[in-house]
Image 1 (cartoon, rainbow, N blue to C red):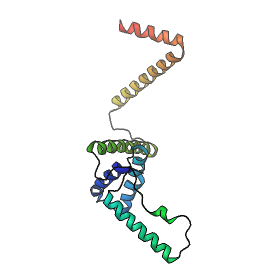
Image 2 (spheres, rainbow, N blue to C red):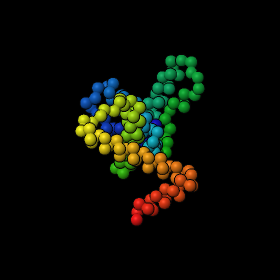
Image 3 (tube, helix red, strand yellow):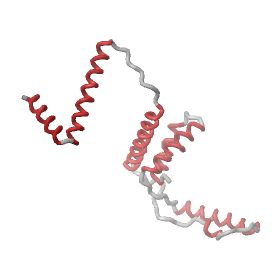
Image 4 (cartoon, helix red, strand yellow):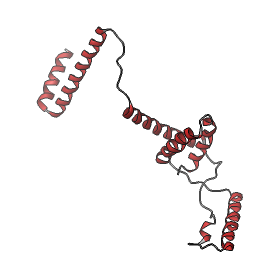
Length: 174
């Protein structure tokens, strides 16, 4: 469930996604955004205003009465279908700060999901057109960086390598 704040955020986003067809909307909103929001955002329970609760109770009693009169076999207690008051907040009781927090948490989740999907599905990297000399210098810097990284890792694992690296770096500074 996305709760009160998530529901309000979705309500405000819907008009902005009006250009999507139903399939695109379902994929973007229902299958992606709502799932991320439900996993990450804090939920606040929604309660009905008293006037709406009164209407829902009357409608529930009317429906359960119709089921009883029709004589359908019923398993369970029909009274369980009648809405009960629950603690929670009203639909129009959402602050801009709550909306922003939920939107940011959801956006961060969507960005992580996009990055993971992109990384898993990316194609082979294309080389950038450049002069041979530039490419060679870049490769040389990459080899140098990898050698430094390997030396630093070795220095973390082997005390003698750590002292040797420390001595080398000390000489370089003077």
